[in-house]
Amino acid sequence: MSAKGYFGGFGGFYVPEVLVASLKELEREYQRISRTAEFEAELQSMLKDYAGRPTPLYYARSLSDRVGGARIFLKREDLAHTGSHKINNAIGQALLAKRMGRSRVICETGAGQHGVATATACALLDLECEVYMGETDVERQRLNCYRMNLLGAKINVVKSGSRTLKDSINEAMRDYAATSEDTHYLLGSIVGPHPYPTIVRDFQSVIGVETKEQMARMTGGLPDALVACVGGGSNSIGLFHPFIDDEQVQMFGAEAAGDGIETGKHCASVVVGEEGVLHGSRTLILQDDDGQVSETSSVAAGLDYPAVGPEHAHLSTSNRAKYFGVTDQEAVLAFHLLSEAEGIIPALESAHAIHLATKIAREFSKDQSIVVCLSGRGDKDVAQIAKLEGRL
Image 1 (cartoon, rainbow, N blue to C red):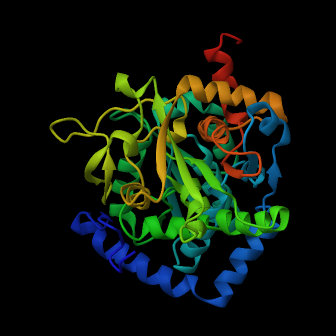
Image 2 (cartoon, rainbow, N blue to C red):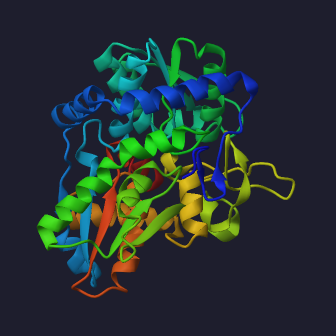
């Protein structure tokens, strides 16, 4: 990555003038604060004693036997406090905001997991918290909305556009532009303008660092492949990044193919997207012939975004990682498969990765291993699945 925040030809800093000074200050303060021994010690203490790290790396023997082929290991981010990987970045940025003297934190959320994690970190550190969440996502993630309220956060329901994650980011960035003197925008994924893709990646890389150490202890070496779901891409880049220089380790991202790529109702921005600028970053975007951002569709609210983080765009175009679409139907089948095979109910986002992993495992031999990032637990999705299947 260059000093200007580019990953190959992707990334950068495409923002209105009103945000330039705030983002440059954020970059300076992040570089200064994050490198201090005091900050690192406090962060590691909170991740260990509060968030529950390290999360387990679990050999899914029953799932592996059912699928055939490679051994499948699950990096259990669903067991982190609040139920997903989002707490890693939320704690890191909330600590940063506190040390920068900010008293108010705002964030966007799709599936609600980042909103819950941010509200949790703010409650812990005595910071005011406001969450922007699309009306569509509020309807399908009522449990997480109530959790945010319990934690003291205010939810601002976004009713513009598609009323999903893209529009929540739009509103959060407008808020930040007007209030940045006392507000920190705690962006939840590796999207947006520099330095956010780097900050979020750094805080989430604990996933891959732990995985590398755990695989060495459990198997004596590195995994043959890594699999993770990709919306904006924070859980996947957290797993991938510490392995990027290990060229023998293959990397696979599962995007939301919705009703099917051919229908146009999907979120597969790496698979079929084109270069463009969204939310301050040059990346791969779903857009029409006129360059307008396309509407998206996914059963998983956390993947319902029309672009991808710039580092994933670079990993794809440089052929370091491969990305595939997983349909809603395939994700729901994987949701049931993992629940029944291992007694683990995955988030719908994570179920996309489970499905892709089962396909890849069949192409590998039994002496090879695959690590899947189980990015979140499925409590939040049970009612939605029950409704889809007519069980309510």
